[in-house]
Amino acid sequence: MSTRTYKDAIELLNGLQSNAAILEALRASGGRMSEFAIPEMVEYLGRIGYSPEDLNKMNVIHVTGTKGKGSTCAFTSSILRSAMPHWNVGLYTSPHIVAVRERVRVNGAPLSEEDFAKYFFEVWDRLDQNDVRQHPSTSAKPMYFRYVTLVAYHAFLSLKLDAVILEVGVGGRYDSTNIVPKPVVAGVTALGLDHTNVLGKTIAEIAWQKGGIYKEGVPALTVNQPQEGMDVLRREAANLKASEFVVTSLIPGLSDVKLGLSGEHQVQNATLAVYLARTFLEARSVPVKSDLPKAFVEGLEKARWPGRCQTVADPRHTATTWYLDGAHTVESLDCCVQWFVNPGVGLPADPSSKPTTRVLIFNCTHGRSGPAFLGGILAKIAAQLKLHGREDEKVETFFDTVIFCANVTYADGGFKSDLTAIAIPDGDLAQLKTQTELASAWRSLVPSFPTPNIHVLPSIEHAVKVVRQLESNAQDLPVAALVTGSLHLVGGVIEVAGLSDVAL
Image (cartoon, rainbow, N blue to C red; front, side, top):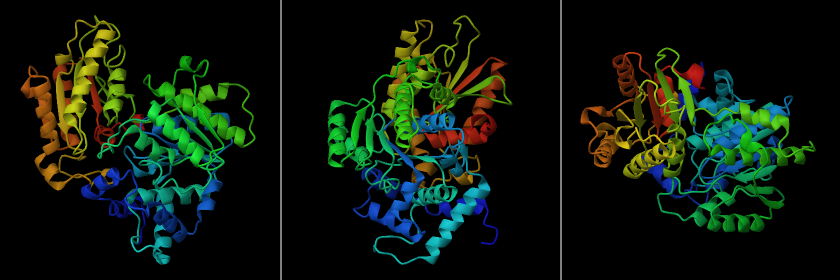
């Protein structure tokens, strides 16, 4: 490959994706797949020229949890950059919204296409040049997530950063990020039953997975948890010989801060981020003189995290506002609706103002419980309308139009290269099975909903076209489009609707 561009890198990376069957097996295992998950990742690391001990040089803050781990990482990164403006701070998260390089950030900005390609191909070449394998099960190249994790490690070590925040991909104990021998601090966000819980694990079993990121001699932090989860985390911190086990408590003044990320649930994530940043700075001999220093407040206010309770005014279609949230569990969808069905967001601040055309664009991964998701959305809408005294609104007519579309980017069946997904079963995609089931569930839940206003569509581009037509028909009345159920869906809407410049 002579050019070795970003596009070339993404094409090779897409070839490392797992198909639907492998991905479901990975989720069922909590990220483990086999007893060799961690040894294999260490082997790949060695093949590109690093030892696990080298990763300690990144000065890692390690974060896992079921809900809010990405937001917590974003808050933590922003706090450190505000408190230590002369530092260079790395952030590794997943998944991306529009471009893979979003996963690897330095000082808040994704790696450039040129830098991502550079580090990508340096890893690629080292794996080709060092193909001696210790474990028979180890493939020549790692799967997609592991490979991007290697690229992140290589980039961060090459750049000699002052701090790196690592978000766990799946689970914790067997995750590709869990080969750092001694992070500076490790934290666990809220525990719950997430979409990877296909085997019906208990909170205690999930806590055991998450608590696996605690390390000997390293402070182990967590937010308040269900008692069974808290007991397991406390035990794991002791078993793994953490230096201390800290349960975050309310920080005076934090609830008054206008957080950069919307939603009441973000207060807990921001609290953990403050604890993580404070613990990290103190470990680096940087004194923190109050519970909530001014620089921390500024970091919390400036934090940005695309696709999570995000309001985006359409830059070219001024009557349309997009409300983007990649919520994909029952609990996160509850938070999403709590945010959206609020005066000044999905509800007009003034009940007497002109009506809004509301649209729901929704999708969820094959095999997840669509009816439960949709039922939860409707129940939360009803609760929010009652809370805000909007007796003039009815849950059955809250949305004027609902759209269930596949996560395929374009109408011709193509994907934006960064959003290509082979994890969608071919039969499901061809027949729009999941989307048809969602539409059927909606009809059952809301029998009075007009059938012509329920759309089952094969691509995100089709969905955006429906919104554009609704705006045209509304004759300058506002259109509010809530996009949720999938971060891939949110990313596709940002791409197709031309929102990248204002949303990312």
